[in-house]
Length: 361
Image (cartoon, rainbow, N blue to C red; front, side):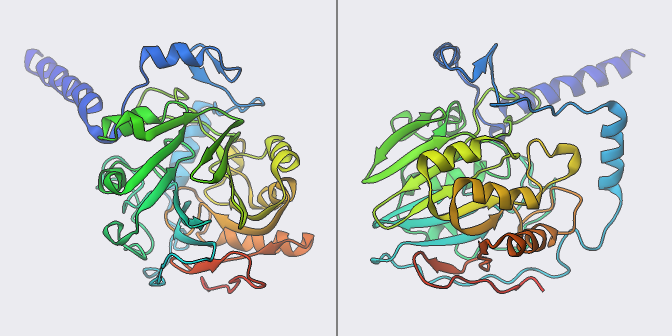
């Protein structure tokens, strides 16, 4: 019994030390920051809140059913072969343009400035590389070392499939500014980004950055890394406006009234990058169903819809192509223009036609 107790205690200590010191879990929001947040209307008792009730508490039975569903094999949850990517010829010029890396990661050039949106460039959306499904394409269309100077990186929230430790370590010395929702800067600072290069914002904060007008806007989601810290940092969407174009980036979000608020205040948008994948009826409060994606696009007054949050990882139970196919079907029924670029394909914003082939077929 004594030996067993020592083994159990030793294992417990190892787990605690791992959670505390393993850098991929990120940093903790300081007490001073938490005191600052107390004045925010969307913060209470150490946690950020959604605009409307967003229940994510499922019964033990329901959680066991979900785990059982994930264990079941399905041949269509990921591609049978590695996805091919385009090799982009990204040159700074007079054109506003955008390029998709898969999932929710984009590079945007607007008014001669280059931004990255949720640049998760890791091979696995997990703090531990040996755990989790691999990236569908195997490789990125362009490696981090080949990227141009990045004026700013914008993050929507701190989940592993959006904010990646390894990506930040490689990116941080070629980025001018990190612009993030409240609390997310704690992770970046732990990973070596100087505080003066980090700007944190709450919902509806507006800022001017190198001639661009940015707005941190609401989303309906949650946050947290590791086993603790649920909702200790904020989640958001972004409005990005320049002389050449206006872009909306949804981040992760369930459907809610914030889309119409954003559309009425800041729309219309030339392009709306809207989440459409990793959904399930059981967690539809935090991830939209594809038909809701189309409605949200209409709410924000988007011209062209580019579906995101699909095409890179399996994080839900649906077939990997279901999100984009359901979006295209709903969009056709409602007269919405949808662009479906390949990973690595450059879209020149303002062109009369955007890529819309069903390349996943």
